[in-house]
Length: 436
Image: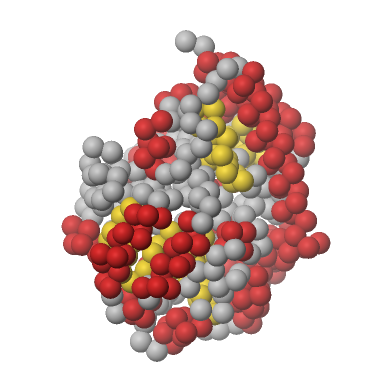
């Protein structure tokens, strides 16, 4: 059992000045309790008590190159010596935008910000301005930020979610404005027939479909064959915009994002996390005809947009991801496949019903009898999250850190030896959680 004495002391101290002792509600629910960390390098994270962990959280996904990547840190250090914030333009903004327009299929123009949450808002504003329509269609289980109009039906209790064919938008927090419910339509993911039926009824009022191209936050659920293509067809037919929230998938599933991997091009996409190498940066990219409205009558502003540090980090991270024709991705695919296959084999040996689903760079582990999870309701009804919570803590005690909600992220810094050590920990953790 690791010694977490210092972490417990710091959490007690933090609770006096920080609600729940944390600065993001997501961290408050971590099991066994929110730990405090002192340093990180490569794929190793070390807490304040000196315990080291092989890290598959990776800052909730951004650290695709691993912690403290030398090229990213060096680029940021050089940039900081020239200034941090000009309240004006600089050349790095152009360089990063040129890289994005070269790599991302839908990116004809770019606008930079600090977080994915804020640029989802910019995308929705653009969609309403371009179409003159009020409604947005989104899907159960998808996460698009914590703002009132998008924190809906992310993890709704099924007794409040309404019938599958006509779900009710369910707020995710106390204090959300009730008025936002009137502007949002919700459906289960991966059911194209329901999308077709909804547009036949209300398509004249729908400005956009907002979707994760792969449902990362709940189950790492890939799109069903033809689903994204169907969304593209429906948007074209009814004059709505297709918006892909690639905050997680952008530069994680490949250099061209999920849209490149799946071969479906949206009108707008939001990128963040992996593109910054661990620094706070986001981008809204899309078709020129849509993006140019930002130069006319659609407002998007921000003091820290395109700041020197963020652009330096993004430029360095993107260069590393492109190096040697994307060698990073081949490495992650190989090691992630080794890890996924190893977890499956161990689960079978322990006779534990376990589903490993997704892609090597981002996959999900769940205790379930299902052979695949297609949408949020299947996840909520058929996954043993209590057992997974015990499994997560069992791994943590053995030096492996994963997220409570089941998604595992891989980085270019992970090594074959660390994958082997991880599988040894998984073997022991499976034995522990299988016991009555």
